[in-house]
Image (cartoon, rainbow, N blue to C red; front, side, top):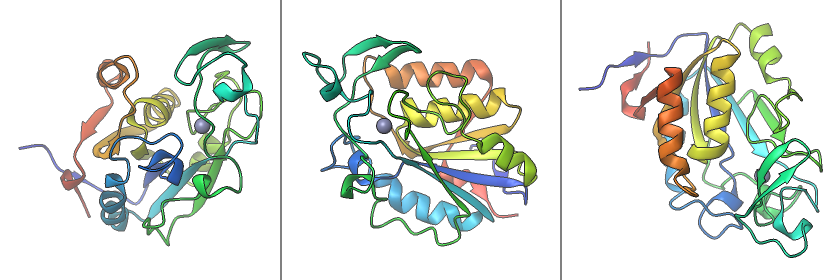
Length: 214
Ligand SMILES: [Zn+2]
């Protein structure tokens, strides 16, 4: 049986991109993405501190295939900051697709962090944009508030959850990925690559049921 982890006062739950466009019926639907909603709703009750991220793109964002004539979604191109997977238009500011899933219930969330709002840079991670140098400010926010360990859940496991968890680890935070509270896009083996990468870094993957209140 898996080890149990007790939630400490300095822990936070980071809920990544549980938005309509990443759920079935959305523009960049993650298979069964909506299944994380009920799990996250239960899980968040065990945490004093919860932060949400919200993918929040301007129209014509450079990560959209539609911004590159002749390109199709899920192709990879090279942008000035490196390789970039091209996505269907998604999570456009002030659209229904960018809204959180209507079933999400986290009234005590302390911060909603928008990301991907610079037209020319995508942002998978909650900590750094995809140029890997432009910070979102989240690390400073967590440090200033004395929050030391992140439990990461949401969408999608193999992109925004992965990059957020890896950056948190590199920034010196404790990190636990709540695997059953995530769902993956799985492009070209990206879900398996994520498991391998997190294991290499020593980031724990656990189930939501193993997280208990102190
Ligand atoms: Zn996006």
